[in-house]
View 1 (cartoon, rainbow, N blue to C red):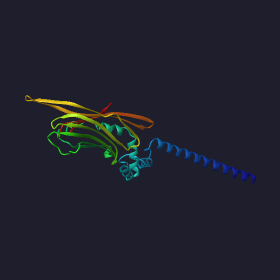
View 2 (view 1 turned 90 degrees about the vertical axis):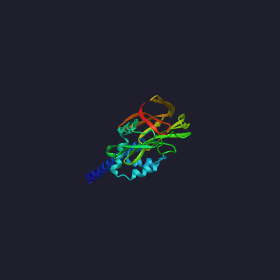
View 3 (view 1 turned 135 degrees about the vertical axis):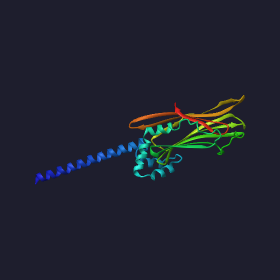
Length: 261
């Protein structure tokens, strides 16, 4: 009887030890999970939903609704794209200079490119404030604003928006002054850090001669440096780019680029 009692007590203590060990492991796992989510708001689908729900960034509610509408498999794929430095690099590379094919008189234009079988969409827009129709006349006398915007969408959810714009004065024939330049961003990735440098503006000269007749005038330029970084498998990848745009007196963004600093 004494032996049976001893064995029973030993079994109880052994079971208790296993339970304590299991609980400790579970607690450690939970703690690691919590720490990962604190360091990376997009570590898991649940963490990303919490991040969007508590974000005050413009467009967060729309992104939350879009993300929650994805299937669990799509959500996992989405999280994977957020942590893939190649996606960020592709987003920036796809926003390289695009001069050819843009009409000198088109005041509004857009283009779209896709990656990963359409999972990753990059949209680009070029507009001038208050005027959308194409015109073969210079902008009227007064101040105007030309803007270049690029978006990154993952599985239909818009997560990054980078904008650069420049305000300038037209005398009805030529651009006479670059008033100011500015830039803005919307970053709803939770995994990618993007910071903005100081926007710059300037006037640039153009001129051509044909058949003894010469014309000359000014374009307006704007630029800003974006500093981007993403943590991936224990390493941080830094991707710094200079975004640049040029607009003419017709209100057209005739050229733009995003190049390594």
